[in-house]
Amino acid sequence: MPRTTQIFCASTLYGAATVAAAIDSDLFGPADRRLLLVSNNAANPETTPSVDAMPGFDAVRSRFDEVLSWNETIAPFHPGSWGPRLGDVPLWERHLRALWRLGDDRVELAVESIQVNPALALAQLFTDAPVDVYADGLMSYGPTRNKLDPLVGTRVRRVLRLDLVPGLEPLLLTEFGVPSELVPNDAFVKVLGELADSDTELPDVAGEPALLLGQYLSALDILTPQQEEDLHVEMVRGAVALGHTRLVFKPHPTAPARWSRVLEEEAARLGAEVTVVDTPVLAEVIFQRLRPALVVGCFSTALFTAASLYGLPVARVGTDLLLDRLTPYQNSNRVPVTIADALLPDLKDAAAVERWSMPADQTEPGGLPDLLKAVGYAMQPQVCSTLRPDAEKYLSTRLNAHTWRYFRRRRLTSLALPGAVPAQLAFLPRNATVRRIARRARAVRRKAGR
Image: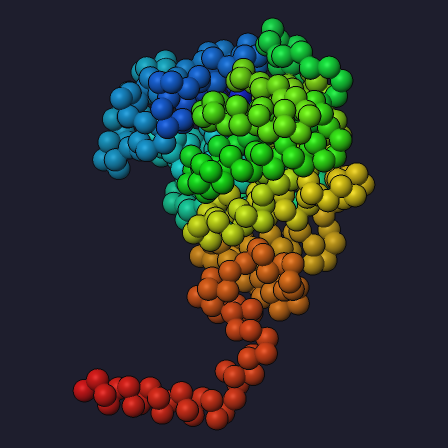
């Protein structure tokens, strides 16, 4: 009987913590070896700390027999762009089995973002390995980003996820009938507690500050650097307007230092004080250490862990701008932005921020699940072809001044969906006179072209 080796691939400490919580909850069967394969997917991995170099990693490390580096394995190639050529797959598999001392082991894979490298590359290299996909954030609630090779998609057994939005089911990999399975929230919070108990140094901040989360969206070409800087300034102004004079800003690890200085100057002008956390720690560690009175962000997953797992007040900024700026329409960030915009209170609406709490479930007809089915189909009509009736129903009954923000008329037109033609002109395609004039116009155009 061959040994079983489970290989867990992680590119973030949040993902590694999710896997650790799943292991603690016995969601993976017994194995002779458990290997954590860390991948640094940053644009410049040489200057960005890898998962195993993050503060608190040792708390997660104990679940695994060995930690391996995917970057070192495929150097000098970048993990986000390298994948094996079809003819090289047997050679690479033999190489990895020798390098990682796998021998003839039965390999099981647990990966994130199966539709792109490095997860896709691993699934292609171990051609017989069953695959579990775990959700690192909100994107699992959206459709699979790319059409996946059935030789990979049919090997996926389940999607492991946190219950960040109670009652909301993911669309990821539903085209292959892959079921989702919850990683218990309490197990995940326990792992995060271990991270928070590590020797990570955080600045001392009196009282319960407001925490501002940066995402570095300009690096993804979603916003310009100036627009993102303005977004951070809006966070400061909104938090101060709600009465918070002690602010903590957690920038993205690769964001420019000048953004922090701009926030400090704006806060000082408004009579508040900003403390910048420049240590690369999870936002969840800050939640536990500082217990912020308010968490402000755009569409960060941390907003939902703050609300769902820690019961902290949250508020969003800039989602209306992002819904307008995201291109192409099928940009995979669209679903997280849509969820944040639809569920979370606007920082400018003090009354909404004051009374908001995470809904207990999302089963209301015409609510968020139905909205996401329509958005998901509009994003990936080939992948989510079975959702067309749901999209048609939502668009024919729920489009109004508010919900139009989640769609684009040009996109609906290209897919022949309701809403493509303004309501006051909807009679035209059914009008016999209009059809007759259109036929004559086409005939004239054909004659003119001869």
